[in-house]
Length: 128
Image (cartoon, rainbow, N blue to C red; front, side):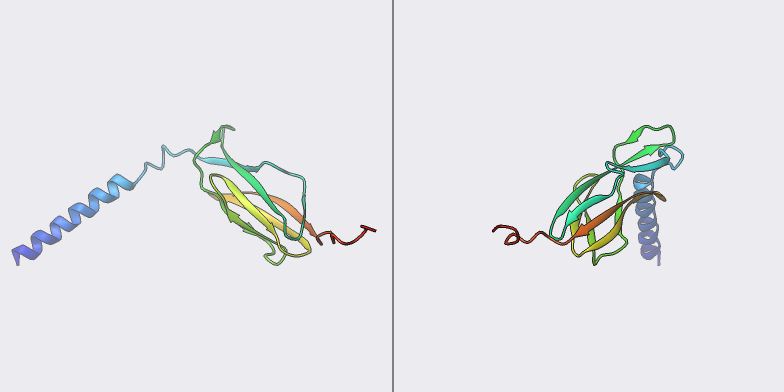
């Protein structure tokens, strides 16, 4: 009985140490005031193109926060998809004709840009 009790206490102590080591003081974490993208005007692409967007988060005082993880999403995956790239980038892939809104989000703040996808030019068209 005391062996089980000792192991239980040891397990609880280890868990408490891990939680303490991995936790941050929420009061010291900077608050994200806004998220911005490197473009604000709609992005025009042809089917098959890719485009790299860059997001940045600013604190409530307007200072850029360098280590923010962004979640990327699209309003229409049949028109354009987006996947997280390296750092704060999102890689947009033009899939089909139409318009999709791409969103970068962090801590409840978002920035969006519309992506307008047109049909790819026919390389045999207009060549004579």
